[in-house]
Length: 101
Image (cartoon, rainbow, N blue to C red; front, side, top):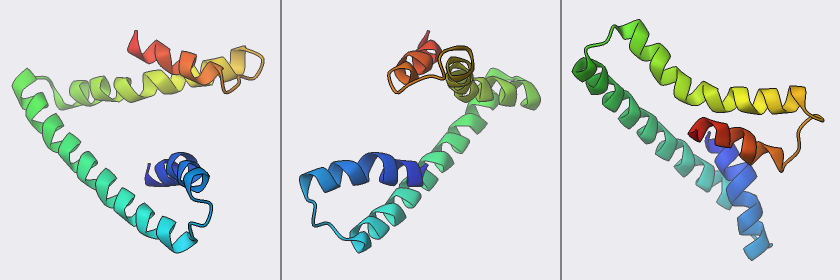
């Protein structure tokens, strides 16, 4: 997640604003991104623990329910790439939009 955030999102934006930015800056930014995502995943794990206890679901039922949030969007992307004209950059937001419906 940190790699995608830095390489695909932050780096092109930063280089557009300041083309003289060196690689050492992006190395430090990636280290901070790893820490940020580690803390966010830790918070999600704590939240999921209490959510599962409050809902009184079985652990396997809860885990499969939580996984459906992430995999629904991925299935939309997969199906748009397979069953359309190989997908495009414009198709990605629409495929992910199926997750929000």
